[in-house]
Image (cartoon, rainbow, N blue to C red; front, side, top):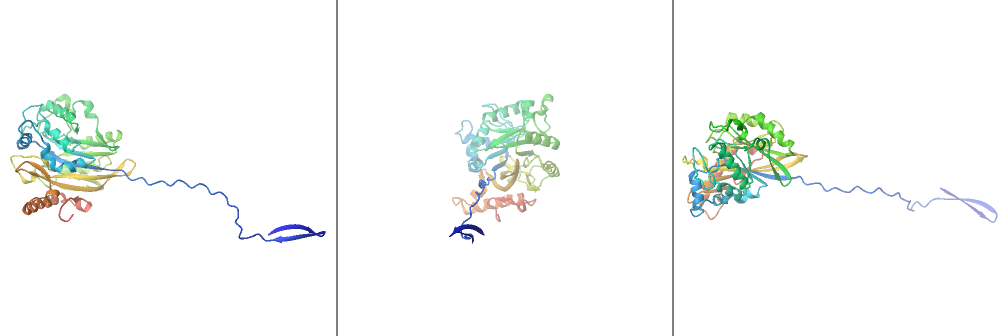
Length: 385
């Protein structure tokens, strides 16, 4: 209520005037609104792990034939898997044998010597690096190991598990994967009773869970956000993991140091298993081989493709686990093939497609032995997936 005083004809009047309730009152300025932040998309990377690369004599003979009998060309052997390998953000295999000098004479089992062109073929296929700590890596002594690592450097392939100097042995192998630092470690159950020189015991890595965790922590200190461990272990030609494999896997995955285990050496596909939110592939089988045994299990392999997602600062988890079964065809030419592709290739006979599908499903059965499908594993192309 407002009071207004007026003087009219000498009289002093006082009028009461009600305010207009429809009038808009003056407003205070609203504080500026905070800028709306667009939620950041979680970073993701894909890591592909593949099995043992072993150049038995029929493998290098095929590579020679693919190069018209002059030198070696290993790319045609791997062309069937190249698109998948190259599409991964980081693709790793296990290189099982030492390398000859340029122009040297290759040799197969039991004391291997592989042509250096094999490394060029792996690089051309799309692989970024390989683990090298395995039972055949000292077949040609320390000089053979050094020659192999030199050849890998020349082919621009990363390597883990072997060293030419103590300084190299102490430095973790770390890849820059689209800005994400990924460390790769490699250890073996043994070296066929061979040893590096007494003053170079650091040249190769025997499995020791304490040493593995120490190396992983050192990689974390070097700013690695993800640590991948390759283990050469288990019993040959067995689909079921050994007691040692189970024990080692539980020990190294129990702490925060290791994110994923890639298993090699069994020459047969073994189970995948989840420990909490972490994965182990006990045996990836052979990526390529052609032993005189000619076992079906040695022709079967698997490439795992793991999508890792950042769930916190420096913390990553596998958000998608996929397995892509492979098969090594011997005739008419030695070739590595992706079973999910050839099993539906209409250019092949119906009988061949059924055989490929049966092989794919058999491999899927090995992978699921420890309930990996219950944890979300997808076997690409398998019946039921």
